Length: 124
Image (cartoon, rainbow, N blue to C red):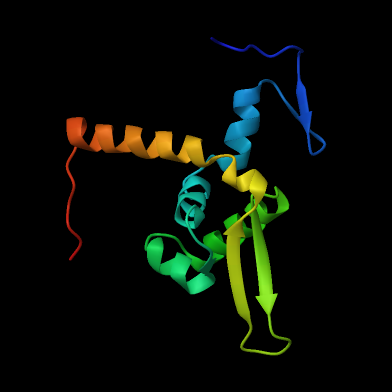
């Protein structure tokens, strides 16, 4: 059953969107947001653990995406300690956990695309 927008616009966090798909894509869309959320779905991770899990992302991009996900309340950031080196840990919020079925669907679809139209390649 399709659910259509019930008005001309949706307002979330003081932003106007033309439809609910736009809201969802603003929150989890782009090259890295969904991937970051996927890597946090089962356990919290430190910044360097995420860097290793995302070898193609730059430090600047990862920092910006983490900040945006935190602002959108999809992830939380906990800082341990008062002076360097600080321990910083990222985890999904309850709101972030609500997108786990979406992430699993994207994973399944990505696997199907890889099997049908591409190939899995081992890193060197």
